[in-house]
Amino acid sequence: MVATENWDTLEWTPVRRGVERKVILTSATTLQLMRFQPGHDTNPHSHDHEQIAYILSGTLDYYLANEKGDMVAHRMIAGSTLAIPAGARHYAQNAGSEPVLNLDIFPVRRPELLPRAIVPKSEAVAWLTKYGKSEEK
Image 1: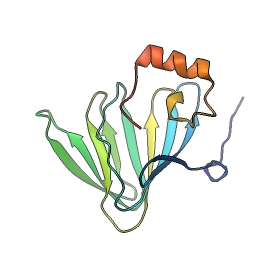
Image 2: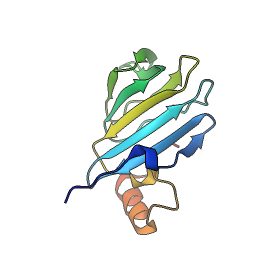
Image 3: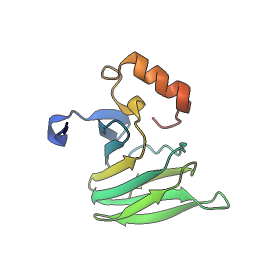
């Protein structure tokens, strides 16, 4: 069975001031489309799985902790990608005057990213039991 989805039919879900997302889940992968407005709130965090960030539009400084734990900025523009290792502390900051569209790819199913009304409680509880609580909100 082939499943299709259209980003344009999904509602933006507020994450924090100036940040919204749309999420598509498959059985083993999560796609997260993020929109960062200029001046948005940041949220340094880490998680137990790898993340690939792909910038669709705008300019974003992606901060990623190096081996010493110092946060290092990576300037990203449309077409840029960044692989974030599992466990690495990171966050993004819009570096321009226009909204940024960022597509995140996670090699795991992350139902906790869906709006609360969409995630079946049993699936959310199972995920949290297996992976623990994420700092990301």
